[in-house]
Image (cartoon, rainbow, N blue to C red; front, side, top):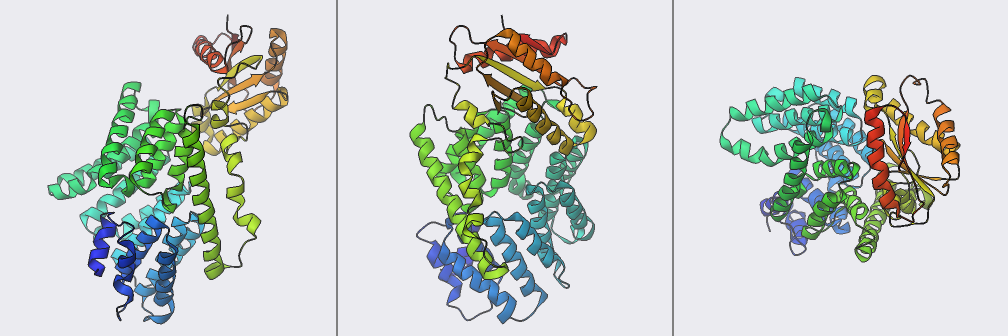
Length: 493
């Protein structure tokens, strides 16, 4: 197999277990200077098969770039860029960013290579939720590289602006750069549009779901979700799904937050069935596990959880190995396995507020063993986020949960949505429940007491109903409370 043949297999995602070893050996036996394509081949093989043989040769290649080959800016750039890609595959974005920043400092890099390095850095930054930093880097690309690259690369730079401004909840600028992309495509031949059509479609889907009801009505949102599931199914047949894995994770995470678990499950299942799981899609595999109905698919859930755990364990082991080889002393075994050891806690507790999670709540919905259910909605969270910023909004939610735990210490609280919580209590006496609600209302939430704090719908289980039935009833009266604005809580009658 030639290097060009191996390169085409990677680009078209047609590598399989029968061809990846010949692809590795396609250049190792040749006495010639390794090149960028060799690097990309090995990175792709390492990602797709998390093969330790591919990893071993990748390490050798990077060492050659740094120590054995001519000390050109390009070879040193390959070294730092390759290191960035390894750490990105291993899920350590902070180190990926460090190595990418080192590559950026090298004088004499040609504009094309600098473009790849910078775009990689931008995507790593916004995936790490460093949106302002990602915006600054993309502005650097726009000012210094944009006019020196092909139109296809210009489209990628503009689309990065669309994604970043969407993450920043800036609809106007996101739309502005999307229109610039359309203008650029209209000036080119059809081939450029064909190359970017699917990417633009997924970014549009991401935009609709991210901006949500602030900019789109329910009909548009629901149609977008339905179209996305069908589109993902079609792309799974042609491997296009894999090309935009980060966008899919962002879209599916949004659907998960919207409690569209069936849709998350369908898309993840399509992908899991169509391709071997890799280190790069661990986040997607976790969404797959979380979206499985444990009530109806317990065997599938256990199998998926075991697979996810093995991927995470392998990633941690390889991260430790790579850190020992390159970066610093190995971390203690307890530290390197920290994420793996807290896996069960990830499923039972909400990452932000530390109360019980949606997944934990779903596991008890059929239970009839409770006295009452309170459905909370944090009022005007969007106003708080827009006025004080999302970091303050997060702190506001954390403080709200802390106040509930203080006012109702013997009850169990679950976060089931962005600003929605359900409290399960053994109390069934109306007066006792009212006292706890009044205590909660008196507790301060920073200095925002001028904003009505929460709305609540309450159902007392005096007829032996399930938690799920109580939730449905509480949801209906919560809607009335929020719309009538006459009181901040109401009991189901």
